[in-house]
Length: 207
Ligand SMILES: [Mn+2]
Image (cartoon, rainbow, N blue to C red; front, side, top):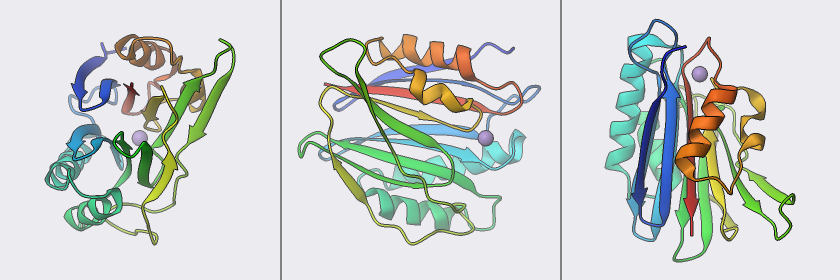
């Protein structure tokens, strides 16, 4: 398998790492991510453009460029702008999760099958709480369901994990919130990346 690419950084309250590989034989991936600052925290976005190869990678780049322009906007506003930017393209699945640390809440919007969850470790080591981002059917660029920003009280000390469908199903459940984010992203990718798709997993923790 091709050596995965690891990106990592800090953004507002988030410390994050993303690990990814492209479809075998392709230099570029149709999976992409953006971590951007907001006025009250930071937003994580993961994009999976339909298909793979250069055409999918171009769509993913268009999506990220649009999401960068709307970094300060609420998730649904950003998703609607991204939908307009991708019209006429093959489209993409997009999941946005904003960690609003000032108001201690999560705000999200998602269309398509980019899975995301927040995991928190209970006082007992084995007790793990998992909250998933509910996904909505549709394709950004083609068909958007009616959307509104959804919110949840921010689980304290949580880890946000987001993965494209190039990561096998149980990936989110396997995340260990006690690991450093870069190690966690690498391990998840190593254990769950499928060899027949672009694959991307992003892990972000907040204090
Ligand atoms: Mn995919």
